[in-house]
Image (cartoon, rainbow, N blue to C red; front, side, top):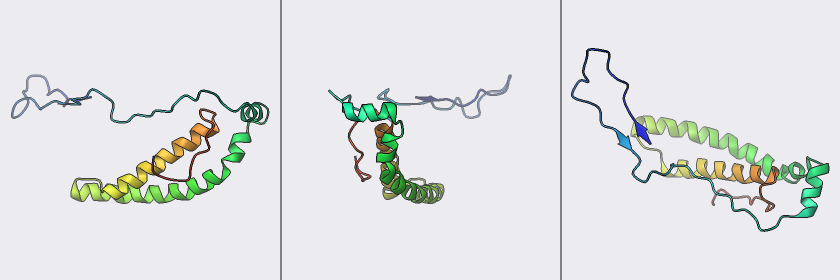
Length: 127
């Protein structure tokens, strides 16, 4: 990942020399998602998903309800976290853990509802 400053206007040089270029030393993207491919999937659940498309969504209603309220809390925690970043220059660890856990849980629920995995998403923010 490389970040570069925009070039100076024609005929002018960078004040103080060219800006430093920041790179990601590992070359890996900072955000990664891995979902293991199951060896086999439930044929009954696949059948209900074919003919009653909302089958998985009905099963996930409790998770959607809880995610809705946790999402509201995550919005406000992220908003307060932006103020913390503005004044301290860092994202508080607890706020980051909560917002990342919410996003992790939301992805697990979405993976279940679209049929990527058959395992019902657990009600937790941890991995």
